[in-house]
Structure formats: structure tokens, C-alpha cells
Amino acid sequence: MAARIGFLRKIWNEGPEARLETNAGQVRAVWRRWGSPIRWRPTHDTYYLVAALRTGADLPTLGITQTALLDLEAAIQQSRTQMPYGILAGQFCVCPETGEKYLLIDDVRPARAELTDRNFADGLRTELRSLADQAARRGKLLIGWYISGTGDDLRLEHEDLDLHREMFPEAWQIVLLHDNADGTERAALMRFESMTQRLYASPFFEMLPDAAESKSGGGDLVTVLPWANHRADQNPSRHSEAQPAAVREYSKPITVSYDVSPAEAKPESQAAPKRATVSARRPVSPPPNARLVFINGEIVAFSDERPETVR
Image (cartoon, rainbow, N blue to C red; front, side, top):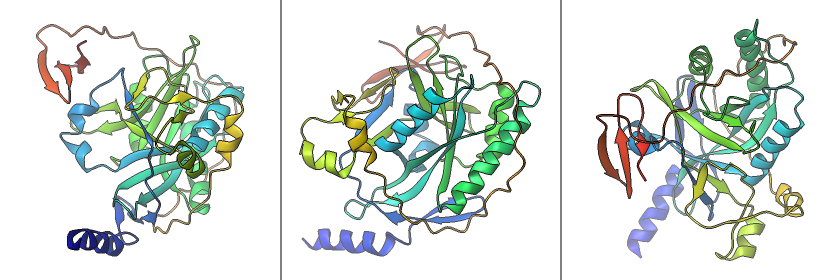
């Protein structure tokens, strides 16, 4: 009992004062219950197992609300461009019950300006800065951005990766890559590892509405995630067409206190969309001379390029 009281006193003292370090300042945490979310792991890229042994261990957990997932799906489906994109914003949170510190994506905002091959980098930079400024005015933390139409390998070209690193330099920030050109929806929340200079898919938690958690009572969980390249630790059922409206009732803004200066907004560029360049798909079988390591119940093959899970 004394240990429990001591733990509660510790997180009570640290909770609102817990801060996320950034290059531009500190972000103060807000209280929010962790609940019983659905954990998703990427199946197409298991490098996160290696990253967690290094820098990944110090990064906040990633969570995304079901409302944000539905907003993202709608923004991509309703876009008239070939490469829909926008920002992902939210909050840095601490659970008052467990002390869990995590980044919560609860705000998806699509870009209005289209991109061209001729002015792709400048147009993307300008629009993302404008959206970042608007997010700051809403009291939101800029967690990352998303772009669809990247090809089913879910990769950024070198110049686009450089732009990502320029605008989202924090190790905890992400880019969500998405593609459904062949009718199968794939996506991943990607973080950048400076040691290997590569993006890797990160596990994340689908945060359920409070009403859904109370109704399930630890039983059947309902997911709104349509991505085929992820598997859940639990066994959630897929939502019906009638459920998203109830899910959307869950999105309550929480004020975030931080002293990071918003990005300066610049004029938008408008033109025809850029077509994605799809890299050749890598084989699933392990490359020659690969080293096999057993990590968290999976055999991971390491080569000079990337690890692959050996089934």
C-alpha cells in the first residue's frame, strides 16, 4: 500500500510538469487516461524491434484516436489529388493512473494546395508550414504529417526524406505513409533513426472512445483501422457502417501548454499533383550472408540493407 501511495504521489507530482524535450523548447504534458487501447504492430517491417533496443526505448509511445483514423480515411478518400497529404497533430499526454507518457494524434488536417513535379518540395514545405501554424493556434502539438500515393512499399524518395528531416527534426515525430492503389489499403507510422539514416514503421495504439471501452468491458474490441499490413495483439472485430458516427462523438480538445514558436505561414502553391515514384519491392526472403537474431518471439534477419522477419 505504501509503495502504491508513493507511486501515485510521484506521478501526481510529475504529471502536469512532465515535459517533452524539443529543439525549439519544451512541451508540457496534459492528463489523459491510457485506457485499454488496441496495439498494432507492422508486419511489413520489423526493424522497430531493433530500434527499440537503441533510441526507440527513449521515445514516447504513439497513440491515435479512432476519430483521427476516420478523419484520415475520409481526407484521403475525398481528395481529388493523386497524392493527398496533410498534418497530424495532438498532445503529449501522461496517464494519471499508470504514469504512461505518450503522444496522442487526435487532429488530422488535410492540405488544400496541390503539388507539382516542378515545385513539389517548395509547395509541400509551404503548405505544411501553414498547417503547422494553424495547429499551433489551436493549441496542438505538431506530431507529424501524412502523404498517400507513395506506392505499396511505403517509402519516401531521398529528396522527400530530406524535406521530412528538415521540417520534422525530432526523433519522436513521424510521417504516415499510405497507399491503396491496388485496392488493398496499407499504411505505416514511420520514425527516422539517425544511426541508420532510415525510416522504420513503428507500432502504435488505437485509442478507443471512453464509451466503447465501458461497453466492451474488456471483451470484444472494435477497430476502425483498415490497414492490411498490421496485426493486433488483441483480436478486434471490424466496425460496421453504423459505428463511425458514435465514434466521432469522442474528440474533446484538451489545452496544451507549450512554448514552441509556430512555423511561419507562406503562400500556397496550386497546380497538378505529383505522381509517386514507386521503388522496386524488396524480397521477403532473407538476403545472402544475413545474420539471424531471435527478438521478442520473432527471428529477424539483418543485412546491410534492412531486417526481414523469417517465417
